Amino acid sequence: MPLPTADTTDFFPPLRPANDDPALLQGTQSWSYAALDARSKSLASGLLHDCRDLEEERIAFFMPASVDYVTALLGVWRAGGIAVPLNVAAAMPELEHVLTTAGVRRLLIGAGPMASAGTPLRVLCARLDIAVLTLETVLQENLTPLPLLDPGRRALMLFTSGTTNKPKGVVSTHRNIRAQISTLLEAWAWQRSDALPLFLPLHHIHGIINILCCALWAGARVELFVKFDADAVLTAVANGAYTVFMAVPTVYVLILRHLSTLPGPDSQRITTGFAAMRLNVSGSAACPVTLFQQWQALTGQTLLERYGMTEIGMGIANPYRGERRAGAVGLPLPGVEVALHGEDGRVIAGDGEPGEIRIRGDNVFLEYWNNPQATAQSFRAGWFCTGDIAVREDGYYRIMGRASVDIIKSGGYKLSALEIEDVLLAHAAIAECAVIGIEDATWGELVSAFVVLRPGTSLSLAALKHWCEGRLSPYKVPRQLQVLTALPRNAMGKVTKPALKALVPPAP
Image (cartoon, rainbow, N blue to C red):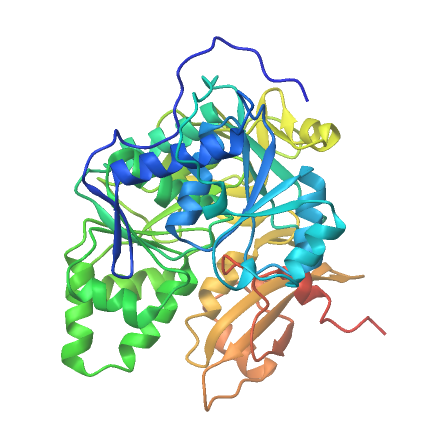
């Protein structure tokens, strides 16, 4: 693909100027901004070897949260490549799809089990003729001149969740990334004194942009965890290690459950640690109103819920200063244009009428890799069509759900599965739930609930219907109920609703 044309500038990836402030912590080890700067330049030099510019070569890396991951991300960018971070929990067919779609020829790994010969990933790469390189062997002591980077250059390729079709490669430029970061630095008042944990998957926009890149640009400190470790993370919280905490709703639920198992004084130290922070953020999946209220009651923190996706970074958020509404994702972020569009394509000007969220701004991605048809179909008159349905209430946006899976059309009504889920989660027996629409010849779709029950409880459809009286309009009450041991979820904790539809027996 040809490079986008623009004025060449000395564009540098998001990293504070080199100094001795701590940038990354992992276990007992610490890396300063100066050390991270030097390490990323060393990797960039090794990747370049005898060439002047990677010219958007797609470099994949298979690493959990670590200094190696951050080195790979920044090093690939500094050398002029496109970073393709892989999901370390993905199955081999999923990795094969990503590697072949992106046209990867080199894959970076860290030290450890993956460095051994004969592992499934190495076997896959051998079959695909992809060179597997241990990061330490690529680091080059003698630095070479690094290319000047145009802000319009492609920089990052992340893949969609693939819940409705094969995952697509979402390509963002350096300009897109800078816009995504700068809007959050302003909106959430990032500070050089900030410190926060990072335990979210790093093949996803949430961990990469919202936490890692924003922190590195602000000069803050990030503590890296391979995965969410309740004991380690909450011990640090109790010790006052963090000023900011960002997680998905599932993690907040796990924390609440963990706190309920601790002696009172231990639980109190942790809740006091959260109370002392300046910001707690929830995202990547809808935050149930009951969870919002429970967290506020226990910690005194009002969760800041926001809305974003792989293609746009963050677009909408509750305010840092101002009212944060339970069940709402907030207001348009600085520099981001947001509009609701009806099914007929018209812009919805007033409040209360549902429409598709469309986004415009420098934060919006460039393209789906090698998929011009999908790219063209995702834009209308310069607006990116998110596929998410929302209503606006006093300027605040409330997500009703994905047009394809969260909007249930029943008896002429458009129902929000997320709204129904919020109500059902207040039931004493229900620990988790997901609501979908099931095709019906009479009603179009029937409301169907899938629930995970709390230990020692039971629930019948008749009992659930009776409980819903006075809590939900009759046409929103579930007509079907299935009890599961667990809901199917992806790496970010989102329920994969197409998998639920597969559990529904065919109509007689």
